[in-house]
Image (cartoon, rainbow, N blue to C red; front, top):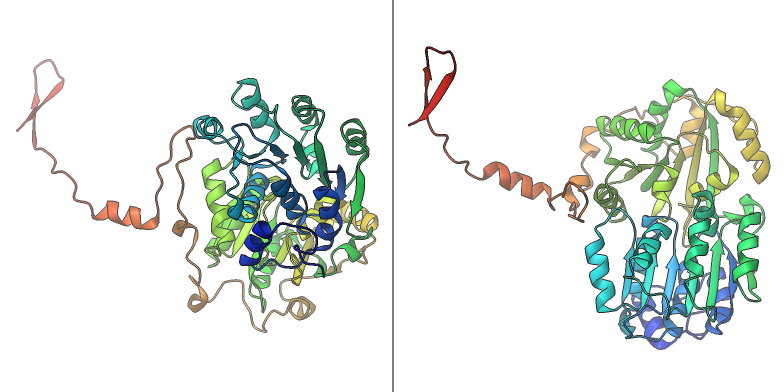
Length: 454
């Protein structure tokens, strides 16, 4: 493996990365960094979890001019969660350079973002909608942007952001470096690259087949009964070596139902989906990233961009609707060279859809084995101890701090939420309450009751 120093990264960035234990570059970084450092346009095809953020981030930080008022680089991401993750990575890598990085996205109050822009930033990372809003309100000036990054372009296409992206690009100087990263390359993304990239170099650091693309992930597919899935899931979560786990559902309602059921069975679980307030979503994601909860139940959009290296298991509680969705889901585990386990539970009614996904990816699971929560092969395949039941034993509960231990931020949403923790609530209960004043009640001849304070 090649180190970042050997790839030409300046000592300030290399030192900051080494302080975080990041010394050797991943394949996508090894391929993309020399090109990016030379100022050339790039089309990078890489799935989530392959290290693409530093593939463009290290070059971006090294090439921009620091200390100006207007941003010199812009990173466009499809979701708030990915924008936050990219921001965190850039702040770490650019710590010794003093790089000012601002993330802007919907769901947060405008004022803090506008205030930061007025003070001056070097890099802006944001979602298309909020970026356009700030540009139209003349709070965000893109006239000095020399580097543009489109991260997870295929996902932005799925979410209907392509028109917004084109509007943003038209506000940026034509003389710029553009880097676009995408897990897949549908026709619309190829057309976008032809319009806005100049003689780009194509970089691909993964194989064409999913089985080769995820060598660190052991995949299991079981044909399951809908009514038995909660029992199967509870036993699966007690498998040997199971650490942080992500469970994917198709709907927000299913996320809430699964998370509530797991909580009743003794597991530290939280749901993340679009119906939750932004502060609630961020609290759940932080709690999961910090290890305060061990299970995150999420929809695909809500979990997009969550970058946690220690996820050991991914569970497709419901059948993914496409091959791309399956790839993105199981890509949450087996990251940074670590091993991972992906388990997919297929209902009878979803067999036809699953066979399409299976065929597109060339997987060997076209006919999943019929499986129940008591099936011996289920226990053996996943390393579940014999005799495991559908509830977590009481002596094993509360091993983590829990969701309540993570602070809920006041982010200026409608209906402001005061920052609070469990300790705050305990203090509220102990705080003495004012004595109620006695009142005498008098009934008049006309009927109404009047009160007199004593």
